[in-house]
Image (cartoon, rainbow, N blue to C red; front, top):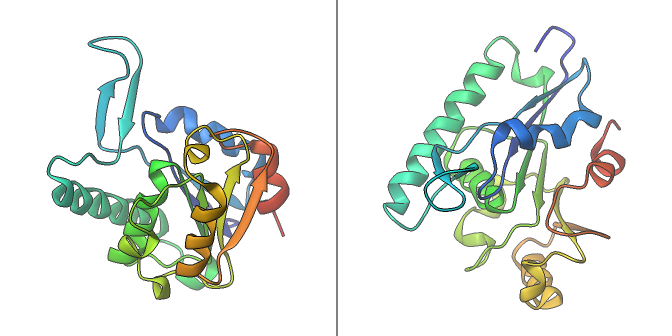
Length: 197
């Protein structure tokens, strides 16, 4: 960050991903006024057996509440470090969560001190409804989005119209954006819809 920075994005990866690769999806929107922060989840594991590629996840059902407390504290410390030399009113903050990162983003907004101007929930699934992880009044009512690909192999296992209807019931201000693609961050869709205003 520098004195020209006006936009900060906190981008939270999905299950089994690593931040160093996930952040590459945001190269098109990064410039001298836009700073991208991609924290990596605290739990790493081998994706296939006992060796090979490594991924990370935000939490499992084991010690679930402790893991949530841990990652909220971790994200809060990153937020405070990144923004410590910038008055809050000089920065526009966007939080984007992808897949498992959507619930992580919501819990952080619910339990932490961070407030953002824009929240992007990309291909997330909330098994018990989004209100289980965040109170609606903790979200930016003008710019809260749900983005998903029409060929998403995970969301298509649900009934997408019913799922989206429930999300809109829980968050009437939610804006839904569908794109032609799968369970991924599409850099072109991201740049076209959420790049510079």
